[in-house]
Image (cartoon, rainbow, N blue to C red):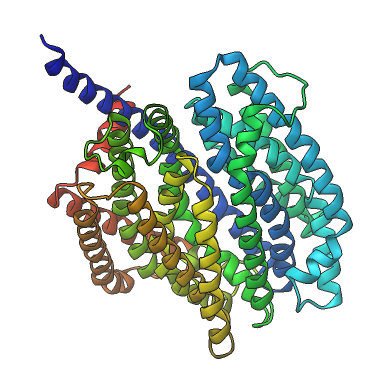
Length: 550
């Protein structure tokens, strides 16, 4: 048989194999994220039930934002932007032992740098709380400062865990890092339940610290075969490449974290409970983002990075398009096809999920949070915040995948610059709306920022790829909005009848109400997908059935 006939068959088999690996990875990460989100909801329920939605919870929200922000700034953003792409390409180019040296160097540098950062932040804890909680009284500021000082060492442990996760993702070992966030949330819940009587709200800070440590222990079994070296070197070529890639992201995240701090500062001026309401609403927003966009982004990133690396080795970046050539290389075609699959899957999953959550927001918030000290007023505030956040949810999910596409091509400058434009959009919307709308105006400004960022990134990605025609994104958007409409209308049609049949005053009745409506909405969504003949979801279905069969 001639090579001309064999090559397409080999390419088809390779594509199917890659889709199978990606789908398996996506399912594993989704399962881990389901566990994380459920435990995250449990964590928020525990916080709401034990401490309510008032000044104590506001103090914890302000304090916990500091270590999270600095982890995201120093390591969290580096994982997908630099560590996974560099570890992946380094593994293709070098021997395994060379990759071990690079990982060891990165771990050691992270340990030294983060230890120094923690010491500095401890010294600056009081002015940090002054910034994050501008409208706190003296008692609340003292409490928030105490909580912050307890939690700050978690930055070190979360940072080391992030480096380990990047290594495992680059080797396509997804199981253990997928459950790190679940372990973190479980630790906070356990600490609150076991230590609240003796430590009060400080039990939450102890749980944050324990959860950060547990993330490292959880990933240790996956590191078998990795030979650690006690070596420090800023001149290592891999470290230099990571630094080059991460510098724009670092600068962008500084701006982003300042924006978050401004957001919290402004929210603290809009009345008691605003910070807590935004925190609880953001947790709901993060649930579909984590289940869909984050999971798919991490699953697709190693494959996209491998295609981008092959493309850079065969054709200098931009040479084909600048010369006017029309034919794509196999690596370029593979990159676009893989990215198209990722974007279609995100659109098909996030749009109906956002519609269902929007319709069910009040009963879901009541079910999750309205216990103990969390009262109906807190539910109303949280539902209002979620309503204002919801227009930006699909945009944020799509945007995450587009950013991943740029990161896989070792382009971190573009997302950072677009992030600056997003901040301008946020401030342009937030400041005029702050006085007339208060806290909901800030949430709307966040939505506007996410939408603007997505639109700009998609425009630039189209230029980088020389067009995005043939990826099926237009038809997928139509199908997604059609399915979302069917899902939302079905839930609304059934809710009034079901509400007259089930009493939602008790927790059991409310839980049954939410579960039944969610189930009916899911069936309506799946039926819509079947009628619309959506092949992307059938891929996940076949992989899931194969896993269950085994």
